Amino acid sequence: MKTKKNSLVLGLLALIILIFAGCGENVVATVNGEKITQDQLTLQVNELKSSYEQQGIDFTGDNGQKMLASLEKDTLEQMIETRIMLQEAKKIGKLEAPDVQEKIKPLKEQFPSEADYNTFLSQVNLSEEDVAYILYLQDETTKDVAPVSEEAVRKYYDENQEQFSQPEQLKVRHILFFVDDGTMGLPTQHSDAEAKKMADDVIALLDEGRDFAELAKERSEDTGTKAEGGLYTASESGTVPEFYAAAAALSVGEYTKESVKTDYGYHVIKLEEVIPAKAESFDSVKELLTEQLTDQAKQEKFNQYMQEARDKAVIVNKLEAK
Image (cartoon, rainbow, N blue to C red; front, side, top):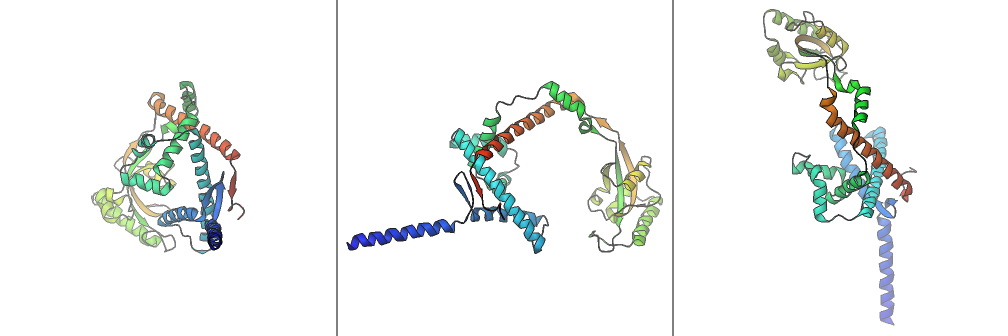
C-alpha cells in the first residue's frame, strides 16, 4: 500500500508540474492548435526593435511604447501567417534534406556571402527548412500560372509609357553652404548672410580661374557630393525647383554668377552635361517585363490561396483585443 501511495503522490506531482509548465508557456496565439508563445514573440520583436533602433527610431516615452505595442501586434500577425504557410506546405508533401537544399539554392545565390544569408535567416527568424517549405508552397500553388502573353505585355507597355522613359537630366557640379540657426539639424550652422558670403567668395575665386571641382572638394558642405567635386545628376522631379531652374538656365561649362538660394542654403552650380530624354523600346524591356508581370500574377494567385487558407484556419490571437 505504501508503494501504491507513493506512486499516486508522484503521479499527482507530475500532473501539477505539467499544469504549471503549460501555464508558464504564456501562449499568445494558436494556429490550428499550434502554439505561439510570448517568449517566441518577444524574441522576434526584440530583434526587430534593435534593427529599428539602429536606424534611429526611439522607442522611449509614450509614443515609443505605442510603436512597440503596434510592432508586437504586427509581428504576431506575421508569425501567424508563417505558421499557416508552413502547415499548408506540409500538407502538400514532405521535403527531404536534398530537397531543402535544392529549394533554397536560388535564394541563397542572391546573397553576396554566407554571412549575409545567415543574417537574413536570423532577421526573418526562420530555419532553412522553413524557408524551403514556404518556397515549395509558392511553387506548388502557382505552377499552373502561365507566362503572361506578349499581347498583355505590349498592352501594359503602351499604357504605362512613363515607366519606360527617362526625362532630361542635368549633370552638374555644385558647392553648398548651409543656412541653419541650429533648429534644422544640418551638419553645419550659418546665418543667411554668412552662407551667402561664403558662396559669393567661391564665385569670386572661380572668376579668378580656380577649378570648380577642386573648390567643391575644399569648401562644399554637401558631404554626399564633395568627394566627387560636387558632381550630381539632377532631374526636374527629384531636385528642388530653384536649383533645377538655375542649372537649366546655364550653358554647358558655365557656372552661376550669383549664388542660388534654396531651403538648404546657398549653392554655386556649374552645368557639365545635358543628358537628353530617352525612352526604352518595347523589345528592350519585353523579356524583363514578361517576367515581372508573370511574377505578379503568381503573387496574386498565392495571396488568394493564403487568404482562403487563413479563412479556414482556427486562429486564436490574444493580442487582438488589446
